[in-house]
Length: 408
Ligand code: EZ4
Ligand code: CO
Image (cartoon, rainbow, N blue to C red; front, side):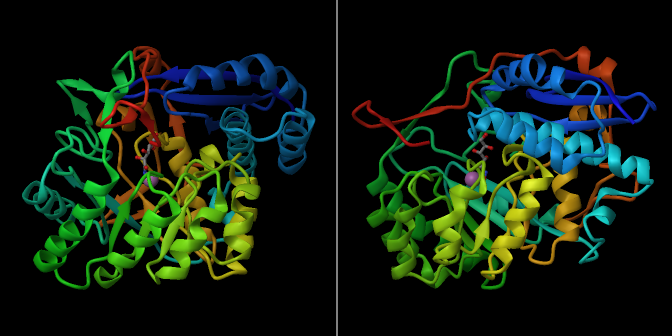
């Protein structure tokens, strides 16, 4: 079998998605997700101009070899653009291999280790009453666990607080992913640190001790602030506290670890195992947060999960709306197969997105299942995709009250 074409499709059925479609001389095709929120076109160029020509004429079954060739052969290793592009190729080749075998991908990854995949959903509100309503809505949808984020008194716009639903993130009547310039958020760490315990107190007293709760600090804290937050919220028994500090400096989580038993999760912006090395070797975290799409594909993420498992660290793959259904499918197959699964973030997609990417995975009573279609189990409706072309979009930027830029 030979690859005869590798085409990139950009579509925006509510937000932008970048998809690689690999076609073989035997007519079998594979899909890969290469969506890098706010930098989509850089990955398109990487795939179209640099990787697609290298794939033509190669054997799609050589998944590991192709991955190593693209990773090592570039000389310029790592980085989100490179790794999202390689991820799309890797997913597409696994898709082809599993379709050719006539098996759902999870069967090639060792088969199911569990019957279904536990998820958590997002609850958010400008204030606590709005947040409590949002938690109620997620529970009514069946979510067994909920991430809670609210506005902070005195601040206008804060991470995770959307008007409308968790899916339709709007600002001033426009979707945040369709603003031609980055939206501005404001930030005051002291106000945030004062506020978080009051949110958790309110949620615990409304919903009781048993509901698994998560919270995302979105890389905004110093090591000392991170340690303070992790210890202050310890009594609320979080499922995890996410992205306490900027992710580049792995050592910055040591202080939080020394001062608290609150479980810690990080990694949605990481793109290789080397970003995790200190965190895993020193047991500084409890969950790895990478997505298949941003970590170079199924091949390296599976290796990370095995390495993490040797340290009793579990998975909590990144699953916001900006992972396309192709990327979601790939990680749901992994979720079902790996032993040390923890939880899967799942925000769902717009109805139109589900039509552009028809998929076999299901979300029932808060649990995902990859389905039993051969391959990833996703088909791209290219006509519908073409009817919803790319829309220029940026993620927000975050400023302190004096106007200087802060971590986002
Ligand atoms: O802000 O995916 O845990 N989830 C998150 C996400 C990220 C977006 C950035 O593209 O932090 O919502
Ligand atoms: Co996050």
